[in-house]
Each structure stands twice: as structure tokens, then as C-alpha cells.
Image (cartoon, rainbow, N blue to C red; front, side, top):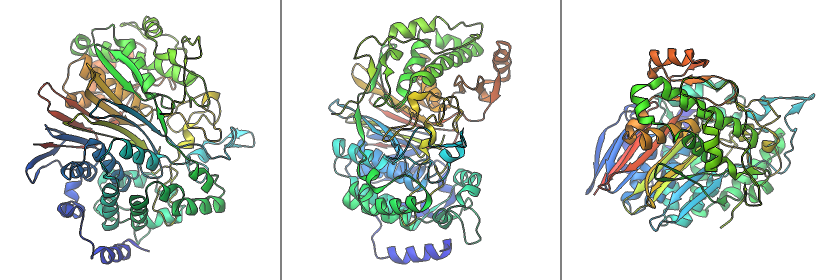
Length: 596
């Protein structure tokens, strides 16, 4: 059915329902509101939105205005920051489906008002029929199979993780959050320029799948363009189902049945049994210290918590504030070299801790301090290899503890509830497959496995047997949701999107804020660099300046430029208990805050 006809049908079907968020009506039809910051007000609370926003009631930052407003609306209706984060995440599944959604996964770090810390692993899992050489054809690994089509998807975990967060720390706003998202899916929203560009970049692959074409292409068979309206009736139905019946509607209901049937017909591996058996995991955060602060990062199968902590620890002995101001080339050089060391360890040791021995010694202060001695301010390390972290006893490994093509969002409130969520379908529009009748874009997270030792994935990352595919295994991730405590209370949270650049961006924001004393908005906006060990090149944003770039080249770095290294969101609180949300100015994202 074409776009015009679908919109007419849905407008008729929803005409009898009272809008849940009627004050959004103008935003749904006016493309200008999709990207431009503005000041708004609602009831007795003052609302501010922009690239940064401050308030003493609550604050939210996401990549899309409608998702940020969904979070703020949830606070207005009596919810807390946890409810707001869930509402924003579900809204992103509608308006930012190229990055995240119901068919993907997530990592969550949350801190409740009573000081409890929760880390939820909603990472996708390999289907039960997966095996180590499933992407080999004629003896050669074919990465196309792990990136596009029916073999590319893991069993999605986002729905289970969001519901678990809502159940444990929310105030009962699950249904209203799902219904807000369903309303926007049903009535449509205006496609932004960034969404249209991402869609156009993968349109040839999307066109191969009927349900994907029906949603994301217009009546002329062209991918939707900026300013057109995207209506998703099937996704609206799926959201209403999970709003009414929770995760069972997704993992044991209509979505599971339709996914099983489609996979069987197209040579995929995900079955109804795989979906019914999916469980999110409760894990213990990676806890490390940096300059009087306690960092709470996400543990394996994320590599983010480990390697953000490594990068900060490797650099702790340097006067970073002085170097950033007086010798920016040396500052970026040292940051890049710390990344090389961390990513070398990542390639060697990291994987799903339920399947591989991932040494806790990677964040041991003694190990990190010894590795830091390799860093020299005036020259590049000739050859970087993985280190030898201590792992001498049974407690020396991460394990299961029960009790830019991605998106990050954060929310906090005055009561002390803080949430950091990084969610993803992996590359743009994931596997490019929409399961017919559901509106759900399936991830291509199987590409985050090492499909063969030394074979790079879509982001150029390599791995070992520790990250090889296996039934029920979770692929290694770079997602790095982080909360920082000072004297036991949260003071800053951040995370990012962009594959392996997530780790480097998150680390650099924390360095700028905690070591260089920049306000959180400036810390996000500051120029970034990135090095992931392989390929051996230093990625830099041109805004670091030509003199610094030339100096880095003279130190021996192979330089490659990028206009934007990752997309981040962050939030901080000051001594007066004012919360400041900061969104990524490179995209741009949208921050919002409420004042009492």
C-alpha cells in the first residue's frame, strides 16, 4: 500500500481516539521542528529544549525531539527519570528506527533514588542453530551474510530490557510509554534530513525486502525524502500489543510467530523457541576510580566499561588540563595512544563472559599503571600488542551475575534517579529486514561476532575465538553507558553511538569534564580523535586544527579526518542541584529539562 493511502487509512482509524500527546500536533507535521531548538512551556513547570537544557526538576537528552519530549511528558504525568528513559527509548524505535528499535538490543546502567545500581544486559543473542563457521562459503568467510538479510540477526533483547528496567525502578508507566510511541507510529512523523540520508545510503539493500519497501519507500518506489511523512501502522500495532501485554506479546505472541514463519521461508535461523527463551541479564557494573570519582561502566559482553576505564586510567598520571590548553597535539597524541593500547586488549580478550574467560585484570590499577608507562608525550609507540593482565584465581574473570549506528539517551530527576541507555540495531536499519506485519526492523548484530579470526566487521574491528558465534551467545559490543559517582551520588552520565567510536567518545567526554573541568555541554562539543588499533590510523576531527594535525603526523601517526566521531548524549548536576542535559551538537540531538 502506498504512503498516501496508508496515511489516509490510519488517520481514519485513529480519529476516534483522544490523542495522548495532543500538544505535539504541530511537531508531527512541521519539518522545522524536527531539528531546530526552541523554548516551550507546559503548565506550572517551565520546559527548556536545545542542544543543552537545565532544570531543577528533571532533564533528558536524546537524538530526536519527539523522543526527548516523550521523556519530559512522562515526568509531567508523574513518572520518574526511569519512566522517562523508557518512554524515550520506545519513541526512538519509531522516529529513529535506523539506529535502534524493538528489533535490536541495549545496555542499561541505572541508579535509583535510594542508591541502588542496576545494569541490564539486553544484548541480542545468537539463534540456537548458530555455529562458529556459519558465514563461511567455499571455505571463505563472507561478511555480507552477517550484515544483511536473514542470517544477520540475533534474537532481539531491547523489549525485555526496557520492561525489566520499568518493572524494577519505574512507577508503572510502561503502557502509557508504549501507547505514546504507538500514536506517533500510527499518525506519522516528518522525516528529517539525517533520517532521509541514512535511508538513501542503504536503499538498494532495503529494496530487496517487501515489508521494508512498503514502509520506507513512497508510491513512486523511491526512498522517503526529508519533509515526507513516515507512517508505520504495523509498528503501531506491535507497540500497542507490548503496551497491553508486556514482553510476552513480543517474545511469545504474534511477533514471534511471524518472525519464525519468515525466517523459515527465507533461510534464517531465528525460531519462535529462540524468542520464547530470550532473557535479559542482570550484571554487575565495572567499577573503577578516576580522580576522586567512581565510574560505573557496563561489563562484558560490552567492551565499553572495561576500555573506557582503561583509557582514563592510562592517562590519569598526565596533566591533561594543561596539555589540552597549551599543547593540544600532545593531548590528542596521548589520548590516541591510550586508545591503541585499550583496543589491542579488546581484540585479544573480550567476548561474552558466559562463554569466554574475560580477565578482570584488564582494569586492575597495577596493570593499567604498568601499561601507562608505554605512553610517551613526544613519540608514538612503535608496535602495540595486547598486554598480560593478571588473572590468577577463580574470581579473576568477568562472569554472569544474576540478581553511530546506535543511539544513546540519558535521563535524571531531582530525586536521584539516573539512567543511561545505549541501544542499537547495529548498522543503519540493521539487517534491512522488516518482518511483515510487525513493522519491526531486525538488527544485524551477528556481524559483531568475529565471523573468523582477523576478519574485520562493518566497523573494521577484528577479534578472536573469544568472540566467535555460538548458540545463545551474545556478540561483543562497544556500547558504553556510564554513570559517574562522587561520594556515592551521581554527578555525570554519558554514552555515545558509533560502533567502536562509542568507547573513544565516551572516554573523551569524561576526560574533558572530569580532568579538564569543562562544563558538560562543552565536553561533548570538544573535538575528538579515535584509534582502534586496527586499522593503524588516527581518526581526527578537522576542528582540532591544522597545526595539531600536522604535529600528529610528524609524530608518526597516519591521519584520517572525519567530520563527526560518534554521537553522544550526557547529563550532569551542579552544586545547586541543577541538572544539565547535553545533546550531541554534531547531529544535532535535543536536550530538554523541567524547572519546578
